[in-house]
Image (cartoon, rainbow, N blue to C red):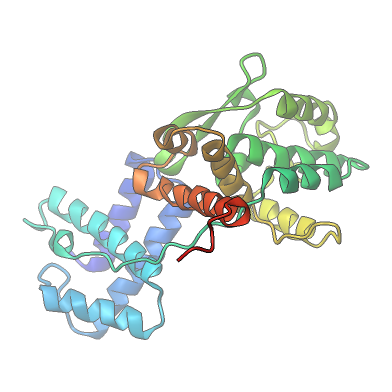
Length: 298
């Protein structure tokens, strides 16, 4: 089987059988196409690679200025692809399981403190239907910590206003429950009253609707945040992920345990969540340096 055919079958498998999101399938496609081109250009057999072949491919990525994080993503894509090749009996062993990921320098995520978050919500106006929708979106992302793609795909039937929960579908279409409080409930009530004003050709299932009556896409949500960042009173560069970071940091700073935050964020691996402990530690260090009389002692 040619590598192009194997990749096509694999992408169909993760799309149809594993129900991966369209964005994830696209990411796998892009990684594997680049890998396939490398294989062909270097006259390699993808079913008969050795460790040196893989090391040379990683060197190639490094020379192309891919970051360690991107190279780790490539390795993850290839591990998954080669696991599939083993499952369909094209290979006996997944050689990529023997390859370590490069070390990734963890950067502290950008987030807002409580006062900055309150100021942001106070700054946002509600003069138009778009303003009301956008403010609801901002509060929802902060109150639930969900990903931008998850917010885009919320349907009306996923929201339980009585129990104040939202059913969301994360990576790999894994379902989890997001919780919210009275503030978001009031904001949702206000938005739902004017939501019909966005409709053009009858009702659609999705919560957030764009100006032409369709689903508010991930890109559209990110563009909304770019416009919010341009408001003179807003002093931070904002993105949907900023509010996800803010959500997690505020939970930990107020006593939530790490595993609970992991579940709420929908992280598969606790290591992904642990970055937020560094944020909390930085806050504690700043408090110490600010207030402790013995702070300058060597």
